[in-house]
Length: 386
Ligand SMILES: Nc1ncnc2c1ncn2[C@@H]1O[C@H](COP(=O)(O)OP(=O)(O)OP(=O)(O)O)[C@@H](O)[C@H]1O
Ligand SMILES: [Mg+2]
Image (tube, rainbow, N blue to C red; front, side):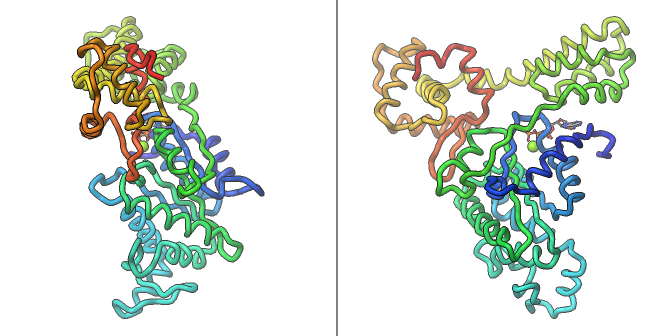
Protein backbone atom coordinates (compact mmCIF):
# COMPACT_ATOMS: atom_id res chain seq x y z
CA UNK A 1 0.00 0.00 0.00
CA UNK A 2 1.34 3.44 -0.75
CA UNK A 3 2.00 5.92 2.03
CA UNK A 4 -0.93 8.14 1.08
CA UNK A 5 -3.31 5.35 2.04
CA UNK A 6 -2.41 5.99 5.66
CA UNK A 7 -3.20 8.83 7.95
CA UNK A 8 0.09 9.86 9.52
CA UNK A 9 0.40 10.31 13.29
CA UNK A 10 3.60 12.34 13.32
CA UNK A 11 3.17 14.18 16.63
CA UNK A 12 2.53 10.94 18.50
CA UNK A 13 5.50 9.28 16.79
CA UNK A 14 7.73 12.21 17.74
CA UNK A 15 6.66 12.04 21.38
CA UNK A 16 7.28 8.32 21.60
CA UNK A 17 10.59 8.59 19.77
CA UNK A 18 11.79 11.03 22.37
CA UNK A 19 10.63 8.78 25.16
CA UNK A 20 12.32 5.72 23.66
CA UNK A 21 15.61 7.26 22.55
CA UNK A 22 16.33 9.85 25.22
CA UNK A 23 16.24 7.96 28.45
CA UNK A 24 16.18 10.29 31.43
CA UNK A 25 18.23 9.40 34.51
CA UNK A 26 16.27 6.91 36.57
CA UNK A 27 13.70 6.33 33.81
CA UNK A 28 12.45 2.80 33.25
CA UNK A 29 12.41 3.27 29.46
CA UNK A 30 15.84 1.63 29.18
CA UNK A 31 14.21 -1.62 30.38
CA UNK A 32 11.73 -1.46 27.55
CA UNK A 33 8.55 0.32 26.52
CA UNK A 34 5.26 -1.57 26.21
CA UNK A 35 2.57 -0.18 23.92
CA UNK A 36 -0.96 -1.51 24.12
CA UNK A 37 -4.29 -0.71 22.50
CA UNK A 38 -7.37 -2.86 21.74
CA UNK A 39 -7.44 -5.13 18.69
CA UNK A 40 -7.63 -3.69 15.18
CA UNK A 41 -7.18 -0.07 16.27
CA UNK A 42 -3.98 0.62 14.33
CA UNK A 43 -1.02 -0.48 16.51
CA UNK A 44 0.96 -2.23 13.79
CA UNK A 45 0.22 0.46 11.21
CA UNK A 46 1.45 3.10 13.63
CA UNK A 47 4.59 1.11 14.45
CA UNK A 48 5.48 0.52 10.80
CA UNK A 49 4.32 3.74 9.14
CA UNK A 50 4.99 6.36 11.81
CA UNK A 51 7.18 5.14 14.65
CA UNK A 52 9.77 3.29 12.59
CA UNK A 53 10.52 6.25 10.27
CA UNK A 54 10.53 8.69 13.20
CA UNK A 55 13.06 6.56 15.10
CA UNK A 56 15.22 6.27 11.99
CA UNK A 57 15.10 10.00 11.52
CA UNK A 58 16.28 10.39 15.09
CA UNK A 59 19.37 8.38 14.13
CA UNK A 60 18.49 4.89 15.37
CA UNK A 61 18.69 1.56 13.57
CA UNK A 62 15.18 0.09 13.77
CA UNK A 63 14.42 -3.64 13.65
CA UNK A 64 10.79 -4.75 13.45
CA UNK A 65 9.79 -8.32 14.31
CA UNK A 66 6.16 -9.39 13.95
CA UNK A 67 5.69 -12.58 15.96
CA UNK A 68 2.39 -13.24 14.21
CA UNK A 69 3.82 -13.00 10.71
CA UNK A 70 4.19 -16.77 10.65
CA UNK A 71 2.37 -18.57 13.43
CA UNK A 72 4.21 -21.82 12.70
CA UNK A 73 7.60 -20.16 13.34
CA UNK A 74 9.16 -20.13 16.80
CA UNK A 75 8.98 -16.58 18.22
CA UNK A 76 12.70 -16.78 19.04
CA UNK A 77 13.55 -17.72 15.47
CA UNK A 78 11.58 -14.74 14.12
CA UNK A 79 13.58 -12.35 16.31
CA UNK A 80 16.92 -13.91 15.32
CA UNK A 81 15.90 -13.73 11.65
CA UNK A 82 15.12 -10.01 11.99
CA UNK A 83 18.58 -9.41 13.42
CA UNK A 84 20.24 -11.45 10.66
CA UNK A 85 18.36 -9.41 8.05
CA UNK A 86 19.48 -6.14 9.63
CA UNK A 87 23.08 -7.28 9.55
CA UNK A 88 22.52 -8.37 5.95
CA UNK A 89 21.35 -4.86 5.07
CA UNK A 90 24.63 -3.36 6.21
CA UNK A 91 26.40 -3.35 2.86
CA UNK A 92 29.86 -2.77 4.20
CA UNK A 93 29.48 -5.46 6.79
CA UNK A 94 28.15 -7.85 4.17
CA UNK A 95 30.89 -7.07 1.66
CA UNK A 96 33.43 -7.93 4.31
CA UNK A 97 31.58 -11.16 4.88
CA UNK A 98 31.44 -11.84 1.12
CA UNK A 99 35.16 -11.52 0.55
CA UNK A 100 35.80 -13.98 3.30
CA UNK A 101 35.86 -17.59 2.11
CA UNK A 102 32.57 -19.36 2.90
CA UNK A 103 32.29 -20.75 6.41
CA UNK A 104 35.17 -18.58 7.55
CA UNK A 105 34.34 -16.23 10.33
CA UNK A 106 34.98 -12.50 9.96
CA UNK A 107 35.93 -10.30 12.84
CA UNK A 108 33.52 -7.41 13.41
CA UNK A 109 34.17 -5.23 16.43
CA UNK A 110 34.92 -7.74 19.12
CA UNK A 111 33.06 -10.59 17.46
CA UNK A 112 34.07 -13.33 15.03
CA UNK A 113 31.22 -13.38 12.62
CA UNK A 114 29.23 -15.63 10.34
CA UNK A 115 25.75 -14.28 9.77
CA UNK A 116 24.10 -17.70 9.53
CA UNK A 117 25.26 -18.66 12.96
CA UNK A 118 23.34 -16.02 14.89
CA UNK A 119 20.59 -17.12 17.21
CA UNK A 120 19.67 -18.82 20.38
CA UNK A 121 21.85 -21.84 21.04
CA UNK A 122 23.89 -21.07 17.93
CA UNK A 123 27.56 -20.15 17.84
CA UNK A 124 26.95 -16.42 17.91
CA UNK A 125 24.61 -15.38 20.67
CA UNK A 126 22.03 -12.62 20.19
CA UNK A 127 24.10 -10.41 22.51
CA UNK A 128 27.25 -10.83 20.40
CA UNK A 129 25.31 -10.15 17.19
CA UNK A 130 23.69 -7.01 18.61
CA UNK A 131 27.09 -5.90 19.90
CA UNK A 132 28.65 -6.28 16.45
CA UNK A 133 25.85 -4.32 14.77
CA UNK A 134 26.00 -1.61 17.41
CA UNK A 135 29.79 -1.21 17.30
CA UNK A 136 29.86 -1.22 13.53
CA UNK A 137 27.02 1.29 13.05
CA UNK A 138 27.80 3.31 16.16
CA UNK A 139 24.07 3.98 16.55
CA UNK A 140 21.31 3.24 19.01
CA UNK A 141 19.35 0.10 18.01
CA UNK A 142 15.59 -0.06 18.59
CA UNK A 143 13.95 -3.49 18.35
CA UNK A 144 10.16 -3.33 17.94
CA UNK A 145 8.44 -6.64 18.71
CA UNK A 146 4.82 -6.77 17.54
CA UNK A 147 2.51 -9.27 19.31
CA UNK A 148 5.22 -9.76 21.95
CA UNK A 149 2.93 -11.82 24.19
CA UNK A 150 3.34 -14.68 21.73
CA UNK A 151 6.95 -15.08 22.93
CA UNK A 152 5.85 -16.29 26.36
CA UNK A 153 3.75 -19.14 24.98
CA UNK A 154 6.85 -21.24 24.23
CA UNK A 155 9.97 -22.10 26.24
CA UNK A 156 12.22 -20.98 23.41
CA UNK A 157 10.38 -17.67 23.21
CA UNK A 158 10.91 -17.09 26.94
CA UNK A 159 14.59 -17.99 26.55
CA UNK A 160 14.85 -15.46 23.71
CA UNK A 161 13.38 -12.73 25.89
CA UNK A 162 16.02 -13.45 28.53
CA UNK A 163 18.71 -13.39 25.83
CA UNK A 164 17.34 -10.01 24.71
CA UNK A 165 17.48 -8.77 28.27
CA UNK A 166 21.17 -9.74 28.43
CA UNK A 167 21.81 -8.03 25.08
CA UNK A 168 19.99 -4.92 26.24
CA UNK A 169 21.96 -4.71 29.49
CA UNK A 170 25.23 -5.17 27.62
CA UNK A 171 24.46 -2.62 24.90
CA UNK A 172 23.20 -0.05 27.39
CA UNK A 173 26.62 0.02 29.06
CA UNK A 174 28.70 3.07 28.28
CA UNK A 175 31.04 1.45 25.76
CA UNK A 176 28.21 0.65 23.31
CA UNK A 177 25.45 2.66 21.68
CA UNK A 178 22.34 1.32 23.37
CA UNK A 179 19.49 -1.08 22.68
CA UNK A 180 15.85 -0.22 23.35
CA UNK A 181 13.11 -2.80 23.10
CA UNK A 182 9.55 -1.74 22.26
CA UNK A 183 6.90 -4.42 22.85
CA UNK A 184 3.46 -4.14 21.23
CA UNK A 185 0.33 -6.14 22.02
CA UNK A 186 -3.41 -5.74 22.40
CA UNK A 187 -3.89 -7.39 25.74
CA UNK A 188 -2.58 -5.54 28.74
CA UNK A 189 -2.81 -8.56 31.05
CA UNK A 190 -0.69 -10.64 28.74
CA UNK A 191 1.95 -7.96 28.30
CA UNK A 192 1.95 -7.32 32.03
CA UNK A 193 3.11 -10.90 32.54
CA UNK A 194 6.33 -10.04 30.75
CA UNK A 195 7.25 -7.32 33.13
CA UNK A 196 5.57 -7.75 36.48
CA UNK A 197 7.59 -10.24 38.44
CA UNK A 198 11.27 -9.64 38.98
CA UNK A 199 12.28 -12.86 37.25
CA UNK A 200 10.52 -11.79 34.08
CA UNK A 201 12.71 -10.36 31.35
CA UNK A 202 11.25 -6.86 31.31
CA UNK A 203 10.76 -6.12 34.96
CA UNK A 204 9.99 -2.44 35.47
CA UNK A 205 9.44 -1.56 31.81
CA UNK A 206 6.90 1.23 31.25
CA UNK A 207 3.44 0.34 29.94
CA UNK A 208 1.78 2.94 27.73
CA UNK A 209 -1.71 2.97 26.32
CA UNK A 210 -1.44 3.95 22.67
CA UNK A 211 -4.09 6.66 22.08
CA UNK A 212 -6.92 5.76 19.72
CA UNK A 213 -7.11 7.30 16.24
CA UNK A 214 -8.52 10.77 16.76
CA UNK A 215 -11.01 13.12 15.07
CA UNK A 216 -8.33 14.33 12.61
CA UNK A 217 -8.12 10.77 11.30
CA UNK A 218 -11.85 10.87 10.59
CA UNK A 219 -11.52 14.22 8.78
CA UNK A 220 -8.78 12.68 6.64
CA UNK A 221 -10.82 9.52 6.19
CA UNK A 222 -14.01 11.29 5.08
CA UNK A 223 -12.05 13.26 2.47
CA UNK A 224 -10.42 10.06 1.21
CA UNK A 225 -13.71 8.10 1.15
CA UNK A 226 -15.02 9.54 -2.08
CA UNK A 227 -18.65 8.61 -1.54
CA UNK A 228 -21.33 10.05 -3.85
CA UNK A 229 -22.44 12.46 -1.13
CA UNK A 230 -20.04 13.66 1.56
CA UNK A 231 -20.64 12.42 5.06
CA UNK A 232 -20.30 14.87 7.93
CA UNK A 233 -17.07 13.99 9.82
CA UNK A 234 -18.73 14.68 13.20
CA UNK A 235 -21.39 12.03 12.49
CA UNK A 236 -18.74 9.59 11.31
CA UNK A 237 -16.55 10.23 14.36
CA UNK A 238 -19.52 9.49 16.61
CA UNK A 239 -19.99 6.12 14.85
CA UNK A 240 -16.25 5.45 14.93
CA UNK A 241 -16.19 5.89 18.72
CA UNK A 242 -19.32 3.77 19.14
CA UNK A 243 -17.78 0.91 17.21
CA UNK A 244 -14.54 0.78 19.16
CA UNK A 245 -12.25 3.02 17.05
CA UNK A 246 -11.73 0.33 14.41
CA UNK A 247 -11.14 1.77 10.91
CA UNK A 248 -12.07 -1.47 9.16
CA UNK A 249 -15.66 -1.24 10.37
CA UNK A 250 -16.00 2.13 8.64
CA UNK A 251 -14.31 0.82 5.49
CA UNK A 252 -16.64 -2.16 5.26
CA UNK A 253 -19.66 0.11 5.70
CA UNK A 254 -18.34 2.50 3.03
CA UNK A 255 -17.91 -0.41 0.62
CA UNK A 256 -21.48 -1.43 1.37
CA UNK A 257 -22.65 1.97 0.19
CA UNK A 258 -20.35 2.21 -2.80
CA UNK A 259 -21.59 -1.09 -4.17
CA UNK A 260 -25.25 -0.34 -3.50
CA UNK A 261 -26.45 1.81 -6.37
CA UNK A 262 -29.95 2.19 -4.93
CA UNK A 263 -28.92 4.49 -2.05
CA UNK A 264 -29.72 8.09 -2.87
CA UNK A 265 -27.52 10.92 -1.54
CA UNK A 266 -29.99 11.85 1.23
CA UNK A 267 -30.19 8.35 2.64
CA UNK A 268 -26.45 7.89 2.85
CA UNK A 269 -25.93 8.79 6.51
CA UNK A 270 -28.83 6.58 7.60
CA UNK A 271 -27.58 3.65 5.54
CA UNK A 272 -23.97 4.21 6.64
CA UNK A 273 -25.03 4.23 10.30
CA UNK A 274 -26.97 0.97 9.85
CA UNK A 275 -24.02 -0.68 8.12
CA UNK A 276 -21.49 0.39 10.76
CA UNK A 277 -23.68 -0.94 13.57
CA UNK A 278 -24.33 -4.19 11.70
CA UNK A 279 -20.58 -4.66 11.14
CA UNK A 280 -19.76 -4.06 14.80
CA UNK A 281 -22.44 -6.55 15.84
CA UNK A 282 -21.39 -9.16 13.31
CA UNK A 283 -17.87 -9.09 14.73
CA UNK A 284 -19.17 -10.13 18.13
CA UNK A 285 -21.85 -12.49 16.86
CA UNK A 286 -19.43 -15.36 16.18
CA UNK A 287 -17.85 -14.95 19.56
CA UNK A 288 -21.24 -14.94 21.28
CA UNK A 289 -22.15 -18.14 19.51
CA UNK A 290 -18.98 -19.86 20.71
CA UNK A 291 -19.61 -18.67 24.27
CA UNK A 292 -23.21 -19.87 24.19
CA UNK A 293 -22.20 -23.34 23.03
CA UNK A 294 -19.88 -24.03 25.97
CA UNK A 295 -20.57 -26.92 28.32
CA UNK A 296 -21.61 -25.94 31.89
CA UNK A 297 -18.13 -26.60 33.31
CA UNK A 298 -16.37 -24.73 30.45
CA UNK A 299 -18.73 -21.83 30.94
CA UNK A 300 -18.12 -21.84 34.71
CA UNK A 301 -14.33 -21.86 34.23
CA UNK A 302 -14.29 -18.94 31.80
CA UNK A 303 -16.71 -16.90 33.93
CA UNK A 304 -14.63 -17.38 37.09
CA UNK A 305 -11.47 -16.51 35.14
CA UNK A 306 -13.16 -13.37 33.80
CA UNK A 307 -14.40 -12.31 37.21
CA UNK A 308 -11.07 -12.96 38.97
CA UNK A 309 -8.86 -11.27 36.37
CA UNK A 310 -5.16 -11.31 37.23
CA UNK A 311 -5.70 -13.08 40.54
CA UNK A 312 -7.11 -16.23 38.89
CA UNK A 313 -5.63 -19.45 40.31
CA UNK A 314 -7.37 -22.35 38.51
CA UNK A 315 -7.12 -25.12 41.11
CA UNK A 316 -7.25 -23.35 44.48
CA UNK A 317 -10.06 -24.58 46.70
CA UNK A 318 -11.76 -21.15 46.77
CA UNK A 319 -11.73 -21.13 42.97
CA UNK A 320 -13.18 -24.66 42.89
CA UNK A 321 -16.04 -23.40 45.05
CA UNK A 322 -16.62 -20.52 42.64
CA UNK A 323 -16.97 -22.95 39.71
CA UNK A 324 -19.70 -24.72 41.64
CA UNK A 325 -21.36 -21.39 42.33
CA UNK A 326 -21.17 -20.36 38.65
CA UNK A 327 -22.83 -23.60 37.55
CA UNK A 328 -25.53 -23.26 40.19
CA UNK A 329 -26.13 -19.57 39.31
CA UNK A 330 -26.62 -20.46 35.67
CA UNK A 331 -29.22 -23.00 36.72
CA UNK A 332 -27.85 -25.55 34.27
CA UNK A 333 -27.00 -28.37 36.65
CA UNK A 334 -28.42 -30.00 39.78
CA UNK A 335 -28.00 -27.91 42.93
CA UNK A 336 -24.51 -28.33 44.42
CA UNK A 337 -22.77 -30.00 41.49
CA UNK A 338 -19.31 -31.36 42.42
CA UNK A 339 -16.50 -29.96 40.32
CA UNK A 340 -13.24 -31.95 40.24
CA UNK A 341 -9.73 -30.87 39.21
CA UNK A 342 -9.45 -33.17 36.13
CA UNK A 343 -12.69 -31.69 34.76
CA UNK A 344 -11.29 -28.18 35.18
CA UNK A 345 -8.10 -29.22 33.36
CA UNK A 346 -10.13 -30.58 30.47
CA UNK A 347 -12.29 -27.46 30.36
CA UNK A 348 -9.18 -25.25 30.27
CA UNK A 349 -7.82 -27.24 27.34
CA UNK A 350 -11.11 -26.98 25.47
CA UNK A 351 -11.29 -23.22 26.09
CA UNK A 352 -7.77 -22.85 24.74
CA UNK A 353 -8.69 -24.77 21.63
CA UNK A 354 -11.69 -22.51 21.11
CA UNK A 355 -9.31 -19.51 21.37
CA UNK A 356 -11.17 -18.08 24.34
CA UNK A 357 -8.36 -18.67 26.81
CA UNK A 358 -4.61 -18.18 26.54
CA UNK A 359 -1.82 -19.91 28.43
CA UNK A 360 1.82 -19.01 28.92
CA UNK A 361 4.58 -21.63 28.79
CA UNK A 362 4.63 -21.49 32.61
CA UNK A 363 0.96 -22.39 32.90
CA UNK A 364 -0.56 -19.01 33.72
CA UNK A 365 -4.02 -18.55 32.21
CA UNK A 366 -5.86 -15.45 31.06
CA UNK A 367 -8.85 -14.69 28.84
CA UNK A 368 -7.78 -14.24 25.22
CA UNK A 369 -9.37 -10.82 24.60
CA UNK A 370 -10.98 -8.14 26.75
CA UNK A 371 -14.08 -8.21 24.51
CA UNK A 372 -14.83 -11.75 25.76
CA UNK A 373 -14.88 -10.50 29.36
CA UNK A 374 -17.14 -7.61 28.27
CA UNK A 375 -19.60 -10.00 26.60
CA UNK A 376 -19.73 -12.26 29.67
CA UNK A 377 -20.31 -9.25 31.89
CA UNK A 378 -23.06 -7.91 29.62
CA UNK A 379 -24.84 -11.26 29.97
CA UNK A 380 -24.63 -10.93 33.77
CA UNK A 381 -22.52 -14.08 33.97
CA UNK A 382 -19.80 -12.51 36.13
CA UNK A 383 -22.11 -11.24 38.87
CA UNK A 384 -21.35 -12.59 42.38
CA UNK A 385 -18.27 -14.49 41.32
CA UNK A 386 -15.55 -12.78 43.38
N1 LIG B 1 -3.23 5.56 10.43
C1 LIG B 1 -4.05 4.80 9.70
N2 LIG B 1 -4.49 5.24 8.50
C2 LIG B 1 -5.32 4.47 7.75
N3 LIG B 1 -5.77 3.25 8.10
C3 LIG B 1 -5.35 2.76 9.29
C4 LIG B 1 -4.48 3.51 10.16
N4 LIG B 1 -4.24 2.78 11.25
C5 LIG B 1 -4.92 1.64 11.09
N5 LIG B 1 -5.58 1.61 9.92
C6 LIG B 1 -6.37 0.48 9.39
O1 LIG B 1 -6.97 -0.20 10.47
C7 LIG B 1 -6.85 -1.61 10.35
C8 LIG B 1 -6.18 -2.18 11.58
O2 LIG B 1 -4.85 -1.68 11.68
P1 LIG B 1 -3.66 -2.50 12.31
O3 LIG B 1 -3.52 -3.83 11.70
O4 LIG B 1 -2.50 -1.58 12.31
O5 LIG B 1 -4.22 -2.65 13.79
P2 LIG B 1 -3.64 -3.50 15.00
O6 LIG B 1 -4.06 -2.74 16.22
O7 LIG B 1 -2.20 -3.77 14.81
O8 LIG B 1 -4.50 -4.84 14.85
P3 LIG B 1 -4.23 -6.25 15.60
O9 LIG B 1 -4.84 -6.10 16.95
O10 LIG B 1 -4.93 -7.26 14.76
O11 LIG B 1 -2.75 -6.45 15.65
C9 LIG B 1 -6.06 -1.85 9.07
O12 LIG B 1 -6.95 -2.19 8.05
C10 LIG B 1 -5.41 -0.52 8.79
O13 LIG B 1 -5.24 -0.30 7.40
MG1 LIG C 1 -1.13 -5.61 14.81
